Length: 101
Image 1 (tube, helix red, strand yellow):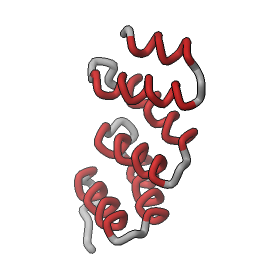
Image 2 (tube, rainbow, N blue to C red):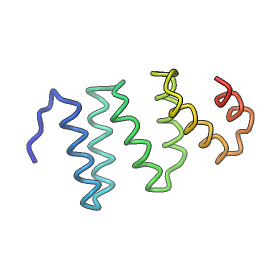
Image 3 (cartoon, rainbow, N blue to C red):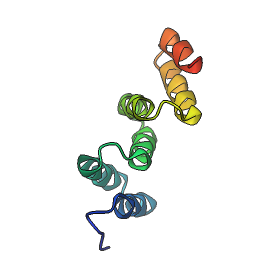
Image 4 (spheres, rainbow, N blue to C red):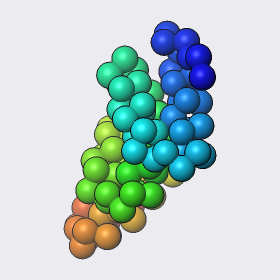
């Protein structure tokens, strides 16, 4: 697959193709590398978090969700996902704080 290195969307499509081919570790690596170039790309971050969760790496998924909320706190879906992630770690106060923002 050829990608345009200047396009975050191309890099996302590559990572998603790798995931669809059951090459999840490579999808994670491709997304992490893309985020070096596009550190605030919400689409890349969202899918990196979901890739981590798919690997049962919930701690890294939580960190990505925290980053997403910091970048764009107005997206209620990010707030809800972060609140649910805090509940997984029994961080009840953080979950309540996030849910009320």
